Amino acid sequence: MLAIISAVMVYAALVGFYDGPYANFVRAGGIVLFMAPYVVWEGLFPLPIRMRATPKSVTYVFEQSTYGREFALLNPQPNAFFYDDSPSVEHA
Image (cartoon, rainbow, N blue to C red; front, top):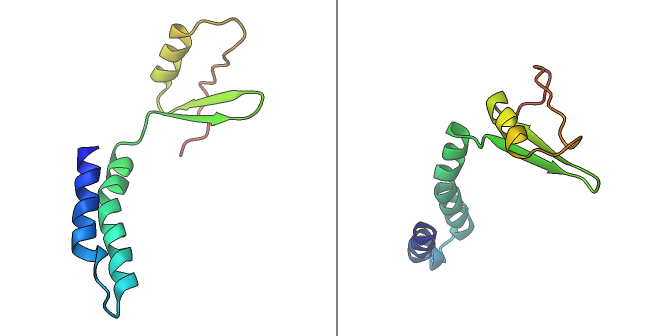
C-alpha cells in the first residue's frame, strides 16, 4: 500500500502539474509507465486459481491439477465438487 501511495505522489509531482501542449500524452504515458511492473508481474507469475461465478454456481479453474485435488480434499462436501483432470479444460 505504501508503494502505491508513493507512486501516486511521484506521478502527481512529475506530470500532474504539467499543462504543456502534450499534457494528455504525458499523463497517459505516466499511467502506462506505472502500470508496466504490474502487467509484467502478472505475466510472469500468474495466479494459480481463477473463479467464475454465476447465480447458481461457482466454478474454480486451477492452473495445476495438484491445486485442484488439494482444494477438493480440504473442502469435503458431498456432490459439491466435480473434478475434471482432462487436458481439454480451459487454460488462459
